[in-house]
Amino acid sequence: MSIAWNEFTPWSALAGGLLIGLAAAMFVLLNGRIAGISGIIGGLFKPIKGEVTWRAVFVLGLIGSPWLYALFAALPQPRIDASFGALVIAGLLVGVGTRYGSGCTSGHGVCGLARLSPRSMVATVAFMAAGFATVFVTRHLLGI
Image (cartoon, helix red, strand yellow):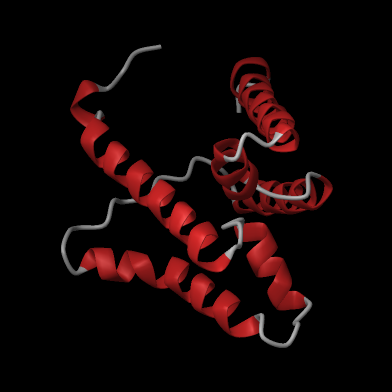
């Protein structure tokens, strides 16, 4: 394995991480809510009075932020090395996993670890291990 040093961008990665951490901290401090995306979106499918507006605005912010970014800088070109079917299956597996794990990477990995939640620590280790194993099997054993 080698690092593509011309594509290594530690400052933008640091800035992005700081913004995510700041947003998650503000969200919990100002609203008393965890910024777990799967829980926020899941709440839109089971609407509760007084819960829909903030959830919809949150999701619109996630969707609209790349357009705002594009006003100031060029958007990176995505490169997807998987078929449409593989992407659909992966998306479904992630969705099922977030339901079984009671959260996703943003809820457990960002917010839960910051609160030193034992459940989030176990969940984060589990989904990271599953990700590592999946990449190893698909890339090195199956050659996909």
